[in-house]
Figure (cartoon, rainbow, N blue to C red):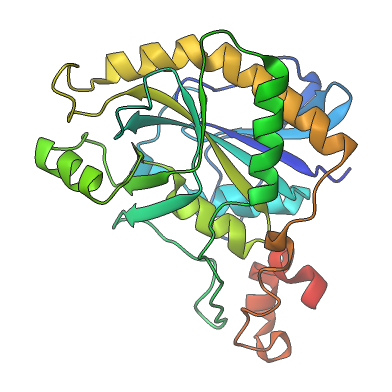
Length: 290
């Protein structure tokens, strides 16, 4: 199988990647179960790309039900080294308006029902996660956005994304609490996805599509699913243009990423001391350390 270096995870409203040529479906079983859906692989402007719909193509999975470990393991198995996550989010800041795009650089984890690591059961690792987003990949996304010159769409660099469990949206008190923390965005999907990508030594960045003002804004209605999906579908075409430009730029000059060496100083259990079954389970992650 040809190694596919570039991957895209599509969130709510982005269930396929237009423009993929010679597209086919790959179904992978992993030690962590099946991914959210079959992975679509094809060529985007001649560049091999893997695309996965985070919630499944029929949007059948709640955020808490997404098999994050299986998704990241499967993409790593295909050879993905750079992963762009597209996510719908609510804004917690006045200057970030619905239909804007954001490249967040920090996360706060408010989830409690999700498996957040590949390790355990015979293998221990503690990754550094102080900077959870690959800055170099975020820079490529920013350059791709500038190249597209999208009318009346603003891009915001940086900001903290609060990842809540869901599926209900925030209470008013929660929304105000997150604003008091200085957070910029709220969503339900990017953790543990970003953490698992780091454990898999995949450069990861989020292209966040703003759909609403959550429920804190006195002059805007509280978010509903209809509102969020409506705004996201409006921006899906713009997001695809940015993704396409990003993939072209990565293919031309993929940047070095510290994420690609995340396990070098993180493994506590020596690989040689791991049981054969453990090494097999983690093989895509540990391949260069075997």
